[in-house]
Image (cartoon, rainbow over all chains, first blue to last red; front, top):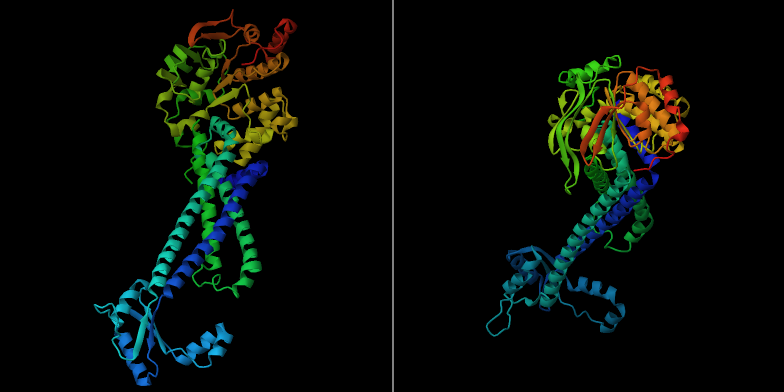
Length: 297
Length: 289
């Protein structure tokens, strides 16, 4: 009986106060839409940054005419080096095929394959790159580095590039996190404000209820239920729009751009659950808490 | 749910409910002699507002069960302060207020809603819920106390018939005249049959003819045994009613007496006739607050 009464009260309030309810709904819809777009973007950016960091490699070029025995020996040496996560061998031929794809004409002119056999060494942590390089080719006092194996021609870390990549990606990740925090805070304030505004329009009503002898919770429950309904409905609409956007725009593009299909973005269902919970919680809590001011009659 | 809104008569509060209220509920015949078993008792009550204004200064008076009393005085004399103290919207700065034997100072904030259900209140600006029909406005006062649907269906049409609103059940407040809105407010105030009814300028927004109808309704409620306290500055009305008058000026009680003789027991009809007598000479519109 009680729950039914509060539900009916909430529905009545929504019907009779269509304009403020709509304003609250629109606010929640918009903020949820922005958050729904932004969460995957933040995740994709972070994912992409991590991806780039993982591409920080040590290239070990072998001398021309390295025999298979040399290659096997170098591989063992590399695997035995500290901080090495993975070693990948790219033969002359493979390297040539790869490069020729990017620029067929240039390689046509070359005729002969100028590329050496290469080992790509992936460090356990991108920050270890330089220490691996110096372990493989210690720098002598003269400033000249000598490889530890005679089959190794040179060790290349692209020192400057590596440093830049590490710095930039760190900055990108930090920015993404900051923006996410700011956006969520802004959403909460916006929703809370809209709710407070719609409650302010009805403060006289609350005052009358108190004078008739209604307890605080008797007055509050319908408002909280109203908040839940508005929050759920607004979020639902936002999710629908996002789903349409995802199916119509993102999915067709995903095959063309690797960034969008970056593996680290949240699954859509998880996103829906998070948004639903956030939308309802913010809206219901906002209504219940904002009401406190007007209950002091 | 933490809501505890059982009908106070059946809830655990029944035990500590003061006897006079229970007694008044059982339809005490009107005209209990004033003074004994006071429903309202002010003792040296003082109210100073934060800004330094004096709302009420050393007010001492008591109003007996079934009595009718007027509070008169110009704007800012403290009439509304007394009303707001009585519904515990304000706290006195000093002194004690007892309603039906209960010291208001001892009612904590959480208990205030339960206390208010024992008092009917009528305001100058009606204070109806704008998005509810007449029926629902009155029903809300019962829903608040946890009244069942059956109870609501039985009581609300009854009280609306008593107040002459049977044909307006499903109208919204903004579709009613001022007099009708005030009748709805009175119906809402009285539907729980409180032992005490407070009316703060109930006719302040109404024309003289409509005002008489409202006073007639309040008189009928008073005759049923309910103590009625009316704040007003409609002096002609007060003079005609010939009831007890408590006059305030700058927060002080300057007069507390029965105007002339108490009118002998008269029927509502006689009352109305007497009130209308000489209406044309009475000042047409009372200055609004």
